[in-house]
Image 1 (cartoon, rainbow, N blue to C red):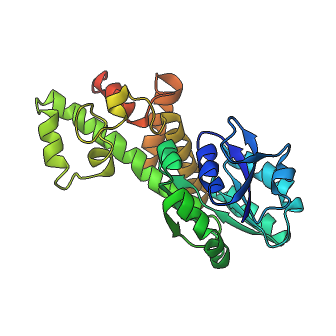
Image 2 (cartoon, helix red, strand yellow):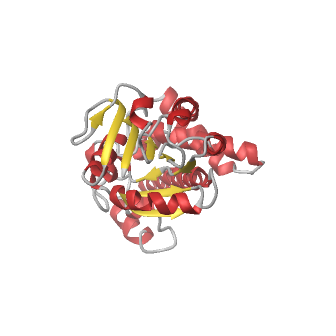
Length: 288
């Protein structure tokens, strides 16, 4: 399979490198040249002969601009597989545009971070036509460990932002609980032992504990170096609230988490830290 890959950044580069072990990959827009990839001089050159074009881009506006550039030169029947995390509206607009050029589009944002991209253990949440999903499924199997087809165009993005809204809210609650335990004189290990095996069980407690030295190793044990950066969590929470506004969905906890991460990233010292660094942030604060 001939693959064009646009957006060879911290996530895209290792994803492309894994694909290049099995397929012919031509790349563009890079911060590093992954092994085994032919580099093109433009997005159009990277995509004109490709069976599948993968994009990994920062936001919906850039995705729309790149799609407008590459769709007219992609060969009929090719698939645009977008792995960016963007707003649902942009994903659906790109899919509609692809259809006008006799192309298929799949929106498939990822979960798993840079480590998952390097190890080929990402999870993909995909929206788009059944036939196109079946065609790119072998690529998901190379880049990741799981791919879930969530329905029509935009539903991959919808799944990602709903998941990460839960993640942001849950991390804040986990950090608050540790600080409350501290102030009540409850040992952190004892709290972990209780919560991790009872009704407070969560991924943020059991797999990604924000308290250093508690539970499996996490960014908390590495001075809160990301991991999953707080500013990326803010991006996803902002997307969740854009979607909630458009869909007239009441999401008060999502709104509160968005406001807290915005404060943490923009007005405090959260930028560049893991999103679990909310714990030391709460440790410094007092009620009211």
